[in-house]
Structures are given as structure tokens and as C-alpha cells.
Image (cartoon, rainbow, N blue to C red; front, side):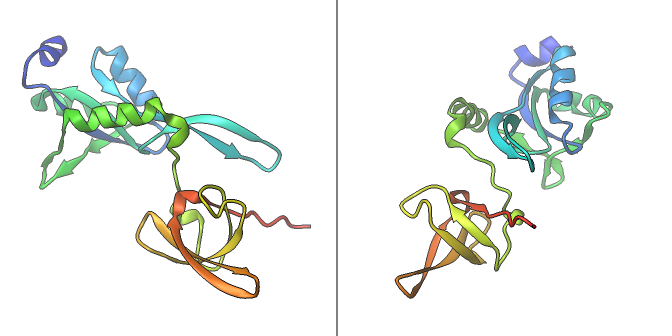
Length: 178
């Protein structure tokens, strides 16, 4: 049944929504069951109070992609880590092959892709610019311009400058308590 679903033209890519941090286990179980599953992973640096470590994390948290016939999707909901099938207009959303290929291309060059938790930086917090022409400057987050850009304020030569830059170009400065 599963192999037939992979070989025929009716098999399409769908996104499964998983419990937080369950993506790798869900993908492993799907592959073990013979399903055609894909989990785009990238390498990111995690910082703890005493060290930094490179770890492999899902590019899109809480999502695993599976190529299967739509009629078999409900069988996948029995996995303990799967919450639901991602839907659009109350129907399972079909992910185009080209979109999966884009994810594969991006994960091949994982060094240039970074996950940005934009909720980690708030208005008024100090940030350090880590990429781009302003690299090395310290600034204050003034406002968000959508999900992917922020306006920062920095003082140079006694003049306040406001710059609109991608949020992936900054990292929050962690204040050390004495």
C-alpha cells in the first residue's frame, strides 16, 4: 500500500504538524515504516551559559513533510508525535515538489541559512549586528518591520542613526549579571 502510493501519480507532498521538538523522531518513525518523509535540517549555534555548540535543528519547527496519497494521510495521525495534517481551506495542503526542492537546496548550504527567533529580541533591547555592512556595531531595537526586519538605533559621532536591516543580521546582547 505504501510502496504503491510512492510509485503512482496520486502521491503528493503534505506537511504534518508535530509536537514541539518531536520532528526528528516522527521523521525517523515514518522512514522506518517505509514512508517517503523529509525533514529539512540546518546547523545552528546554541549558546548556554558556559559554552556554545553547533546543533542540527529543523529549518521549519514542528513540521515534517511526507509524500503519500491523500487517502492514507489519516493513518499517519496515529503516530504519537503527529498533532495534525497542515490544512489550507479546510483541506490537507498539498506542498509542491518545487517547494520541497527549494528546501533541499537551502539545506545543502546550511551555513547561509539561519533560524531567527524574532520573539527573542524586543523593542528597547540591545543587539549586536553580526552580518552586513554594519557588522560589529551595537544598537538598540526600535521596532519590527514585519517578521523579518527590524529598525535599530545606534549612536555614531553624536548622531542617532536608524537603520532598517534583516533581523537575521542581529543577535541579542545577553546582559551578564554580577
